[in-house]
Length: 55
Image (cartoon, rainbow, N blue to C red; front, side):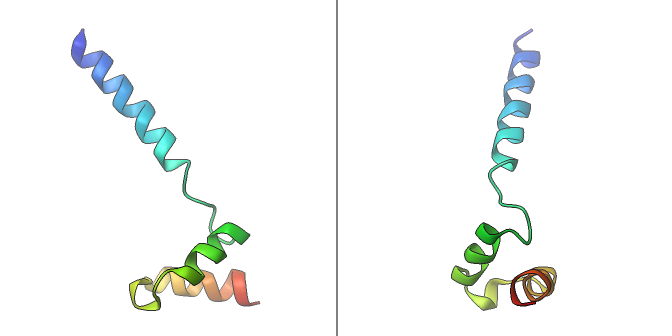
């Protein structure tokens, strides 16, 4: 029974933490990307930033 409770709590925690990331293309995401060093960007992040934040 304890394993089921632990798994449930872990699942809930995972859902809550994943909800903290801003949606790609939102103002908050664009601001977050501007603050992140450009060398740490992935190719997908750079393409999304160009698409959503510059144009």
